[in-house]
Length: 234
Image (cartoon, rainbow, N blue to C red; front, side, top):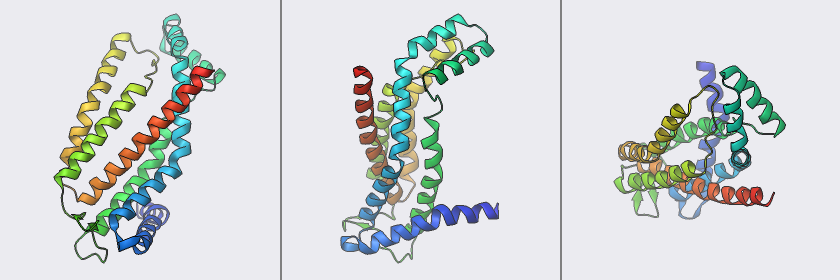
């Protein structure tokens, strides 16, 4: 575990920490909030190609959803469905797991950012926690927690509206409908959880979450619109 921790620190934590300090020392007014905005924007830019590939694959699956459902109706056993679906995915250059890759890659980055912000925002840090001289990012802030929840709601709503739920081998229509209802409920459940957790955290973390979610919302809206238009033209 110690070696894993050291590797994590060297690859993720230390570079992000040093870069955040660099930004803080060079942005006008040595403003931590502006530094957080810049680093959040850069993370989104780095991960943009993966997000674009994921959404492009989702839109391609949406185009073939009817054909995929036909395969499920034609082949009744889970083994037959799995075999035919994988064959169909391969023939149409669809990766049903593409949506997982950006999330997997983001997790260590998000965790490292969380640790960096926690350490920066602790009492006694040499970095001033003030944003625009008004908001103390080291203290709890209910307003920012609520804003994080609101932004999460719109992001979840867009995801639920645009994400294609693919038929799963061996899953009945009734079970699939239950899954869809649970996904719909998460649209309202996750923002509430976000607010409840955010209320107990330093404002710098909810500020980061809000900025990251809003940037992600704008990014996804642009990509869905772009690739949705491409699909209609093909």
